[in-house]
Image (tube, rainbow, N blue to C red; front, side, top):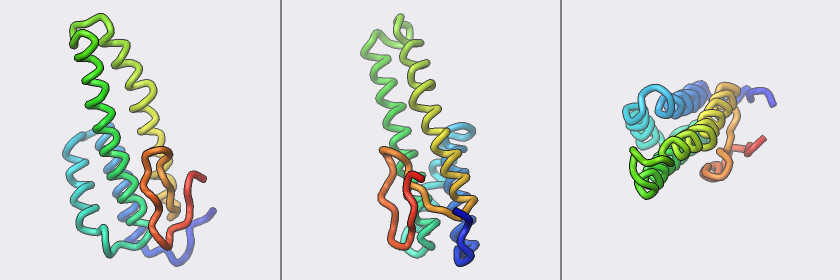
Length: 138
């Protein structure tokens, strides 16, 4: 589906920025990128165009879930004997193979959707799309 002509550039650039910050949080600058993403969401959550609101909500939600998964897998490592335990690398490789890589792929797809001016909902952990924003998993 091509980008609609009535998508405001401000909404488009904000949507792209949200997705880029999400990927940056996962891959380049964890924490700092998340704080900037939270600030953008807080600043624009009410008055941004539907496209930008959708991508901001999706990326904040997915970032929070990524943090929960990271903490959960660290707890599993500690419960299985700590970081010197024999299961440490099994858990770490499992986390990066399944969870982290899936979050990165979803972020790359979300970035492509944002650049195309389309809304998209993250599977399983995405927020409902706002009014005025069609789309979904397609």
